[in-house]
Length: 95
Image (tube, rainbow, N blue to C red; front, top):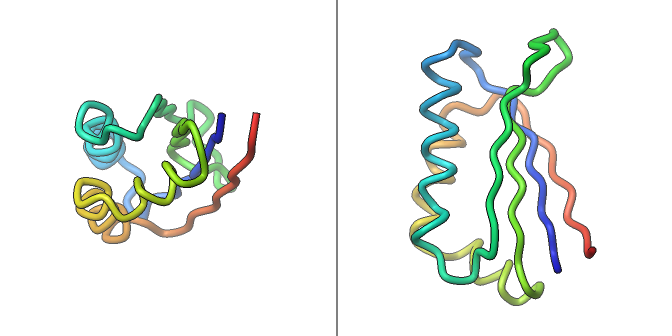
């Protein structure tokens, strides 16, 4: 199982932007066949150094993850994420 994590720090760290971003990310779950699982967690600490959202995606293989990255649904969601993103970090690993 391949897991990819994405930490997202938003430009506007308000509840409305956080909820919209969470909703956009979760919307991919039913639309991308190679996506085996998706989790979105919202930071409850909200410290200056904290990131706002953690996205965890699950794939059967690296090939499936590569297919996810170019999927039109993911590409559209990514455009939104880029528009609200202040900073991000990612880790991909095999479990």
